[in-house]
Image (cartoon, rainbow, N blue to C red):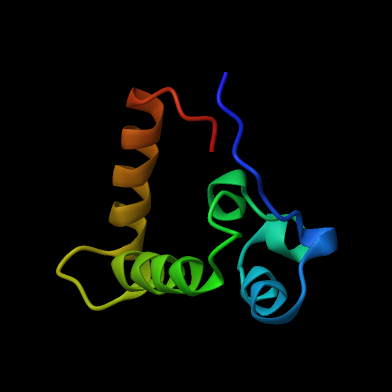
Length: 84
């Protein structure tokens, strides 16, 4: 099984800590950061760009509603057997 070095939230400093803390949702409120975000922790600039893309896709201007986007993401995750 592959192993990817990450920086957990408790050890994050500087820009990475800021990015981790800028998350939204119930997990972020509890100080948790999803593993998909932590995988990019060694390169905070890339993580920041990925987060900006995610925000634009899910919350930016669109002909479909936020609810519809979340439903699409849920179906894709379920199809891919993704746990989050």
